Length: 426
Image (cartoon, helix red, strand yellow):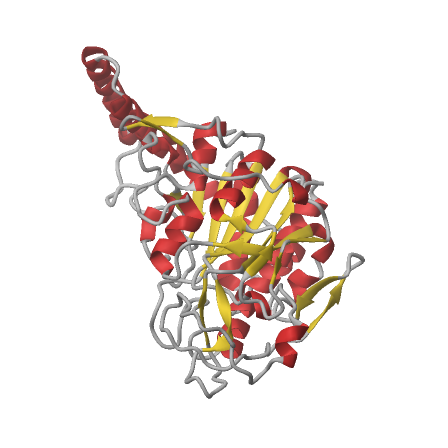
């Protein structure tokens, strides 16, 4: 019925988190041994580098997961890990666009917008598609990652911020006399309706009117849904609220659950802000994988595990799909000179991991494989087109039939591609 998409910005290393490679341990310090020139970002191909994180089998399923996410690892029996993801770009912004819309260029509708377009919303007081960005800033590409593109604008993702002002400009800058705001909205609605009658069918005008009407309703609904002070202490603790390093992500994960309870169809949570800076505020671990990933994982591990536990105890996980993705993985070789084992890793578009939980997927299951060092996908490859087709299928939508006519083309999320990964279904 609904979905939460957790998106890790910067490129999480699969071989340090969800894709155990004992072969990489054995090959540590050896050269890649390939004559090809890999499509990576900085072009430095150092020696092969073992993981800095310890792996072990988790839960009754025995899934091999690292200690990077100790709390999420406790939920291994709820998830399917896809270890054979591939993408077309090793550059952050186009790779993020690809993960969100199925295209490397901006301007195409995001998966949340397609879900909104296909399934609508279960409430008239909140948007169907809500985005919760990292408190340190939004991802590369900004709002283009949750655009509605050529779909009607009411399917655009609406960004809610964690703080005292969840939505910019939702309320007047100057306090208005009681009743005047409602009177102004009523009068504006009359004018819009009169203009619509005179103009005839106009999809853009109709969409804009619906957006204004939704904004008016959100003046009441947003303060209520974003006020988490009434949540019991044990729930707040479950999400890591009150703990400095987990507070931001914990609030956003808790807010996501509250949004779903009130009828929002698709919530996207970002981990990581803009690429660059020092220290980095994303998963882009060029300099040092261990330090970067330990810090970033520490911010989200407890909140996301708390979200899964909370959804399960409320009976919501059965009809909620939780997605955990990143735009690409990281290389099994160090980003350093060809004779060195440096502490960082470059971008890897050839093979990486994500996971899904709830909503009809197998529990405690892994799908697909990369090669023995985690460099390239070798079994059951899942491209973003396939991933998107699978997500739509799990939400009851045929990706080939969810279309929108634009510029002479019947457009769809999966373009002319995409195969459903039937092997992950319960």
